[in-house]
Amino acid sequence: AQQPTIGFVGAGRMACALAQGIVSAGLIQPERLIASDVLPAARDEFARTVGVTTHMLSATEATERGRVTGRLHVLASTT
Image 1 (cartoon, helix red, strand yellow):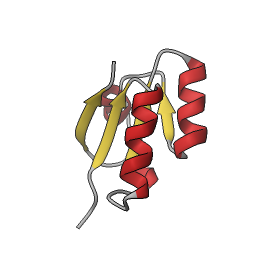
Image 2: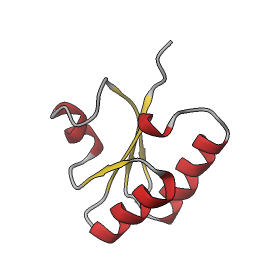
Image 3: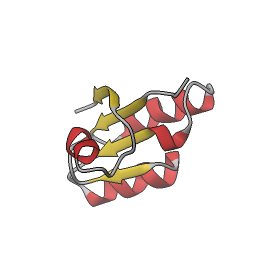
């Protein structure tokens, strides 16, 4: 079974902590996570810390535009 895709709206400290916990627990592979933030520094830190893709687009827009493979299953807002 394919793992779900989880998208975070906001890529700040809380999103980083949640994403790291999900990955560390082995619940999901990093490539199944996406984060969106208007601040480049937040996106860069999230990508560096968690090792995932980030976008300036909303997670839903990124999925719709094909920047994320598969369907977005969970959208977590941390803002």
